[in-house]
Image 1: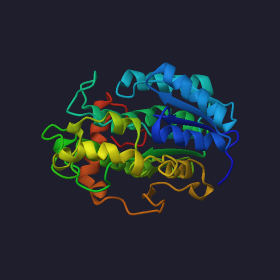
Image 2 (image 1 turned 120 degrees about the vertical axis):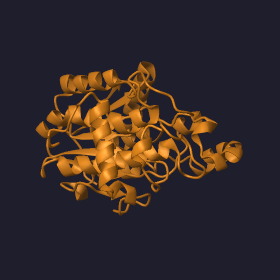
Image 3 (image 1 turned 30 degrees about the horizontal axis):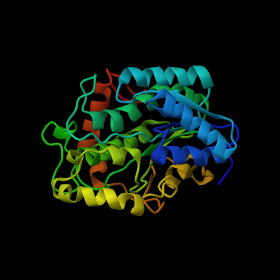
Amino acid sequence: MTQMDGRTVLVTGGTGGIGKETARGLARLGARVVVVGRDARRAAEAAEELRHTTGNGQVHALTADLSRQRDVRRLAGEVAERHGELHVLLNNAGANPPSRILTEDGVETAFAVNVLAPYLLTTLLLPILRHSAPARVVNITGGVPRGRIDPANLQAERSFAGWLTDTQYNRSKLALMAMSRTFAELEPPGGVTVNVGYPGHAYTPMNKASGIGSYPVLARPIVPLLRVLMPRVWGDLEKPARNGIRLAADPTFEGLTGTYLDIKGRTAGWPATTADPDVRAAVWEACEKLTSGDRHPGTPG
């Protein structure tokens, strides 16, 4: 894997879990890394710890609550103002709320953080990414990469959690993948690539904080046992971070777009629901509408 000296990377959700481990790996490769977290103190502490453990003094921190569109817009402005260039945007931050909770923008929280925030932040940062090209957008998915996206239930209007793998978190991560495919197709070749990596399961701060309502109905009786097993089975964060690091830094992916890496780091076929043209159109239209009409410049109409 190539060194990343002189390249600037923004990692959302970079103050803990997979995001922090991904930031660590990229800092070790020599990148200038900007980690984004909701809490200013925690973000500053994470940046300091990463500088110390990697020996890379170019690790910085920014603060934003990605469930708030005003914060996403402020973050994009600060990145452009403070850094002037951006070679990799790694959308890693996620949310798995215990029930259907609306944000201050009136959007269901999982959809707001897992789909709208990557869409809006990428759209707002396109000018600086294109200026810095070749540049990469890496979106980290999650949950179980199968199932169905219901265009009438994007914000859990009909149901929040199903019996098996059908949860709002899982659906929102599938919607992220559908959005990413459309974004990749709209971007002109040779400039900004958009790819998706699946990290697999990991014991992260988000998982620790997830309420029982965020689990499938049939899994809820064994949630206490799962919480005991998670640190032992999924406590290693280095492995789940590998796909994000590869998609951000590996020269193999230079110029490749619309690629999906599975849990084993292989280029894999996308979940079937993300190829459905009606589903993709519904997700894309929701992204535009729910972000007050912010549109990718390649969107027709």
